[in-house]
Image (cartoon, rainbow, N blue to C red; front, side, top):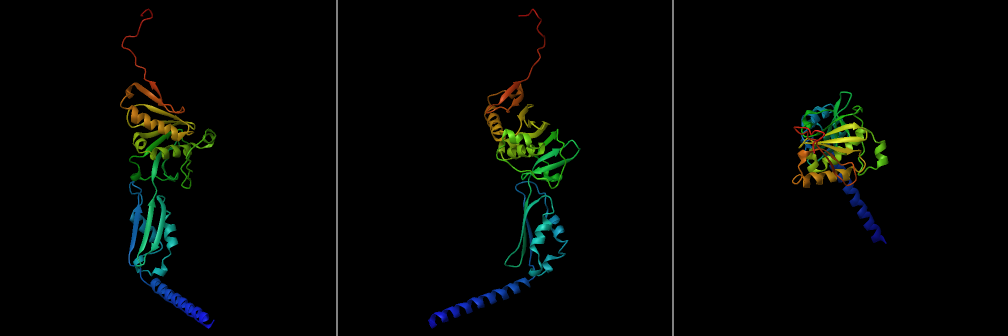
Length: 278
């Protein structure tokens, strides 16, 4: 029995000794000066919308010189919160490495749509459905939308993504929410994202797509069954462009279930027929 107590006592002393060493080690670590400060920005394959200089400027509001500060003085949560005030920052992770270096990893937002509303405002919607202010670096290659869009720019506004939308759901969604869903589906398709350059809004339930090739309008209708409609359009352009003379058509209609309906152009003849011509 004494042997058991002795083993427990020894084990307890070892644990206490380890805890003391860890505490002293942690205290010593906290007293170390920050050895290096690095910022990594993941642009998600897009243009740079957040710069190192901008991030350093934000953090300098609380820390004039990080490399002169001790590890224990650094408030990582504050650094993350102040960095998030940049509207183009999606997520941020600040941490201190074992060598006392400070790292800030940033995931940049990815704009997918540029909006021109009827109020004279222009702004972006990103892949997470969030409204973003204008940034010159983000404009090239983005889908542009205009028409009957009355919703104003609200920095706090963020729309929810839906995998599918029923007819009843489509009736209650706002125009901007629908535009986000359309742009999101297009941006996920490598072929369509290169084909479609504009979305025109006739009204809340009638949307038109403008392709980069040809002079046709594509009638999308509402967002119910959106994924299937765009899938049909993808296959139609990819497979039909070699066999169909697209120049003969003024409109392609994808509003109907599993169909792409082409409306031909009307060409006037040089000499109109007379009534008695056969």
